[in-house]
Image (cartoon, rainbow, N blue to C red; front, side, top):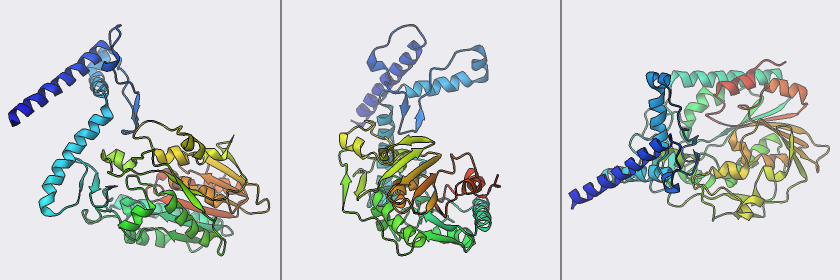
Amino acid sequence: MYQSLRAAFIACFSLVLCAILITAALSFLPVGLPAWLKNPTYSSQLEGRTYEKRPSLSVAALEDGSFQDAFEQYVSDRIPSRDRMLMANASLQRALIATAALPFGYDVYPTFYGSGTVYDSKADMVAPLPERQSPKQEESYRAAAEALSAFASAHPDLNMVFCEVDRLEFSGANPASGLISDPIDRPYMRSRFLSQLPSNLQVVDLEATDKEAFVTDYFRSDHHWNVGGAYKGYTKILDTLLPGATPVTVYGSDTWDNIPFFGSNARLGLCEVVEHDVITDLAYDESDLSVRIDERDESIESLRHRESYDAGAVSDDRYQNRYAEYFHGDFGIIEITNHDKPEGEDIVLIGDSFSNAMERFVAEHYRTTYVIDPRRYPETLGDFVESHPVENVLFVLGGTTYVNPTVISFIGGAEG
């Protein structure tokens, strides 16, 4: 029986491989191909890349090996239903790993052989392996702290808050936190980074207390927080920025259960959670807000695509990044004007993608809210505050962002 199944599998695999090779070969000829022999898509949300184009054949490319490498990837990308094939292969490997782990009582294991992500079967959660301590990482923390200290020293009159967003790579809520030696955990980050920040830069530490709290406030398959977690973070930040201020009053929520979300950890780990994530947004009375994105006038819909989701006008790709699709992608600068607060103060929010889900809440309290992604903004923070007389500066950054050399240069760079 086993031999028969094995022979059948080999035969089917050989037929698929032959079809792919024939398709690739014929694609170099001026002949039409039947639709069933083509991969109809040009990119993969699952892999986060554009498929390899048909390589140009030349003597030079053959001699240096670039044609062979490109052709190999091109052929691989021609596999029909490639995303499904990748997921099925990883699922098979994961089943074997889970079976081997069962006698030892492990419910956390790699999503496939050699994977840098793990699956927690009890929590139905996918997580990256924690990052390890290293001299290079410690130097990055030192450089980031020095940049923030230099900016704070140069601008003592600004009301400044630094919000440390929890990320699984550095969180005690990571199901794999006990599986890695010398991980970069929160105590390590506090001693190497947060404790080194100047006294006039107030710190809000948003560490999740445990795994249960994490999966309540964050997606189980993505590295971002959900809107509930973003709202909780905003209330803690507001209490530091504007002590005594009243957060926006939430009177309901909207959830789009019919639009499945398999987040970045699921895509990276080739592992669909059993109960897929969904996008939820909060219902509250929005102020009269106008929006400019990278110097272009936009509507509030550009910050949260509620109308599109209500109408079902979303990508039909199963592995679409729903977080960015709903809340929006990352831009150099967003300017949100609150016409209900003409006499209010201004604030600049320095954020990565975590701030995309909460910037609307912050904008309810200020006349103008500038949102800058330091990875995409061409000037320095010092240049910005010199040309835009803001009274408040808020950093909302995860541990993989503020150690980015581009971000460090943005924060601590010399003013023009």
